[in-house]
Length: 254
Image 1 (cartoon, rainbow, N blue to C red):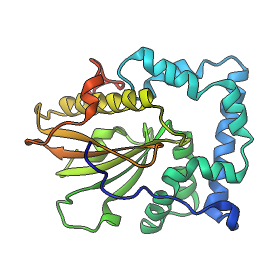
Image 2 (cartoon, rainbow, N blue to C red; image 1 turned 90 degrees about the vertical axis):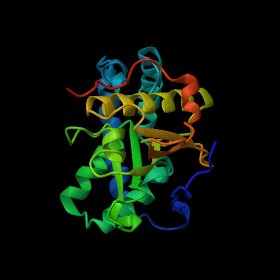
Image 3 (cartoon, rainbow, N blue to C red; image 1 turned 180 degrees about the vertical axis):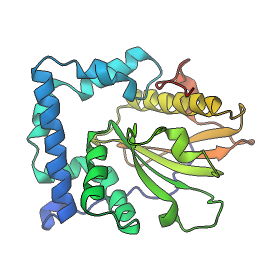
Image 4 (tube, one colour; image 1 turned 45 degrees about the vertical axis):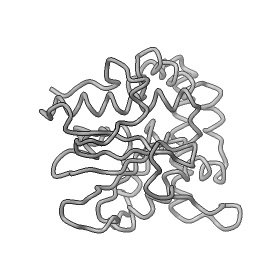
């Protein structure tokens, strides 16, 4: 596989310092979310079935399996009681990038809380930046940190954040919101789902076949899937082609 474009963001160990105001807020929202999940599970709500279409995989069967593991009752109960250090460890694959994003966009107060609540409640978090940027702006101006799926907008999908509008390409990093490592088969299934979702939504947006390529990159961080989304050409596609499914994990747009 090609090499990754840059190092994944990391936080310094929270055990060596006091938590920042943002980190305390992340912990508060994280625990509140998983308490609500645990409460629904205890009432018999089938959360895995309700949210299986939010997971990236090559088939519905695989999505249901992923959702069942992610929303297992014992796991939800454990996460609802996580210490602040544990929450920061489980969030640091995306939290440092979000801190930079929030600083650059001057997020604070209710808006900051709203975006963090969406991130801790999402199944995945995407960090992406346009590359090359059509207007020549520096990376910090074109970097976004998005919940996947992003329910706050009409189209909160991988295609939308990397290839729509004026985009000529983008780098993409995807991790689980609770950023645990991807197992080998889980990684391949997730890449297949990302690819299927991207091309289904590109097609429904009127993009011709072959306009875009997704090259999945090697990442040293087992919690992260990285990709280079480029306009079509002679570039080789990533290894996800080996496990690509026949249907998208999200409904195409109408």
